Image (tube, rainbow, N blue to C red; front, side, top):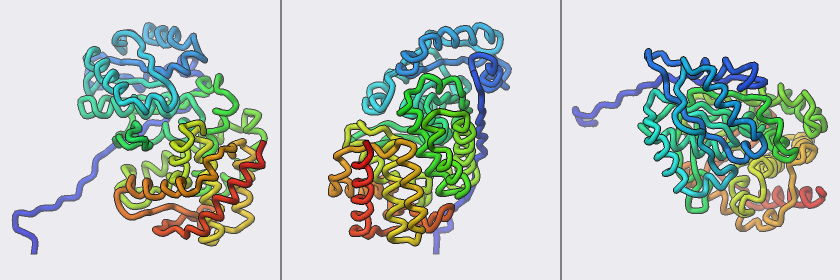
Length: 385
């Protein structure tokens, strides 16, 4: 019998996730950002901007546009100090000392829990700045402006922030709901074709988990996506909405349960990134990982073989099956399963597909069938030139 002094109380916390879509957030749509920054406490909020250096290099006019925005809305917000620039790409997540620099900047600017950090960049920069904002004062309001299709379709919508440590992806991190996320079309204009295509691996992933018809539309439009046609924008928006719905209505926003459906294909993707010293983009590694787990699902869990082939063909048509020798090092790749289990904090739980839109959780992997799947994808990738 429990002690009379023991008491267990279940409770929930109310959050609001604000997702916005714009064409030019520092131009014709700037009211969208201004509205997110308004204060309900009767005082002018302090705001600090952080920008991915890669984004500034591609958009040298962006700092000037931000300053013009702040000047125009000076009666509503107080920009604190200079715009801060931060290393772009995975490098920002691989140096823990960069987080210390961010915290010093927050402190110097006297940011508090009613202040705002606006971060503009790719997923890695969103992760790192978001982590710093989440631990400062136990949480400064964070507004994300993702600048890659990958972040707009997936990670920028999420509630996770992290950096890498011990040569492991996302080993240090927090769960924190962003104050707002703005997916702005203009911020994607300078992406390379390679980086533009990368985001659609996460759109394929969420479609396979949630909606077969969405996957079929992506597959049919793969060639147009490679050409960056207008069909891309509704696909990015739909992927973002599916991710938002999973977080807000899926019942496990902070991943307290065993299953992490949105990590479909990611056990091998995260390992491939570190094995290749991040020569593979995250979107490419996810594309390969989704292909591997889709083929495995057809061998072990009943996914139709034709559907598995369609998935691989879609990823190949999107340009996401990128050749790399690391795929042949299957012994090291298999270590990703144990690292994934450790990250889950319990028994191994991997999402697979019984059918499109019909995910299942499995706790054991048939190594022979998984090796067959890896070999199949490795051979297919090798043929892509």
